Image (cartoon, rainbow, N blue to C red; front, side, top):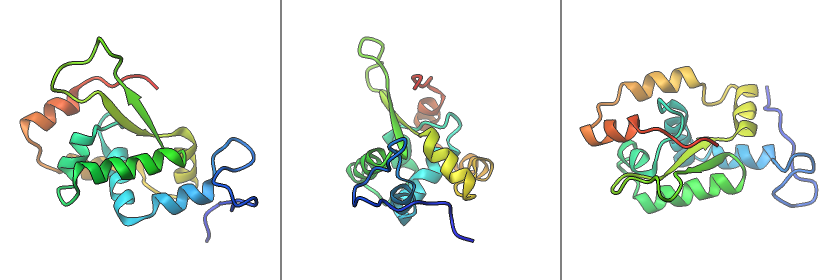
Length: 143
């Protein structure tokens, strides 16, 4: 069975309807490193981890590499960045968080990719430091 996808007909990265190109989204999401990051995002208790949390969960990656992968996933509409408003930020704590977009979640659900229950269970099994648990418990901004 093949996933429900459409390839761009104009050579562009955006589809003609809602601006979300399913073909490109799947292509960028299934890269091994990005898929690991997406699994951690989906499994996160609040569904929107910070780079610091993703860095902890992916010790083989540098934070800058994580940011580059997150940016690429944002560019193709798979992720959304949530940002704490200036003036309400807490010094020393993250203020940017990343979550799967609605379009990407629908695409993943249609194709049985990144099931939330499975990745949540996997994420819960990881032993975390007090600092990571504290960041994990922080409230996230609304989309």
